Amino acid sequence: MKKKEEYSYFDEFVNNSKYIVDSAEILKETLINYSQEKLEENIARVHKIENEADQALHKMRNYLIKDFLPPIDREDIILIGHRLDDIEDFIDEILINFNILNILKIREEAIKFTDLLIECANSVKDAMENFRNFKKIEIVKEKAIAINVLEEKADKLFEEAMKKLYKEESDPIEIIKWSTIYNCLENTTDACERIGDCLEDVVMKNS
Image (cartoon, rainbow, N blue to C red):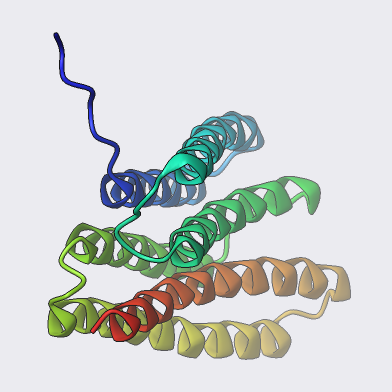
C-alpha cells in the first residue's frame, strides 16, 4: 500500500515564493523589451502564475482546517500565506497599471526598481527555504535583515525617482502616471519587508 504523501507548509511557502520570483522576472522582462503587445501577453503570464499561487493558498487553508497539530500556530501559517500572496498581487497590479495608464516609454528608475524587486523576491525565497529551521533563530533573523536592507534601498530609490520626476517632468498627466507606478513598486518591496518581519515574529514566539 502506497504511503500517503505528507503535506508540508514549509514546502508550500517555498513554492509560493518561487511564484513571486517568476513574476518579478516577467516584470523586468516586460520593461526591458517594452511594447503594448508584449505587455498584454506578460500580464496574462503573471495572471496565470497568480492563479496558481491562489490555488496553492486555498489548498493550504483546506489542509489547515483538518490538520490536528500544525508545526506553528494556525494564525501564523495563514498570515505568512497571505503575506506571500500580497507580494504576488502587487506585482500583478504593477503590470496592470502600465496597461491602464497607457505607459508608452519606460523610465530608467523603473528598471532599477525591478532589479531591486528581483533581489527582494529572491531574498524572500531564501528566507522561506530557511524558515523550516525556524528554531535556529539567528538564521531566520539574518534572512529577514537581508530583506530589510533591500527594502531600505528601495525606499531611497523611490525618493530619488520621485524627486527626478517632479524636477524634470512638466506634463502633470505623466507625473500622475509615474507617481502611481513608483508607488506600486514601493508597495511591492514594502510587502517583501512585511514577510521578513512576520518570520521574525514567528521565531520569537517559538523560541
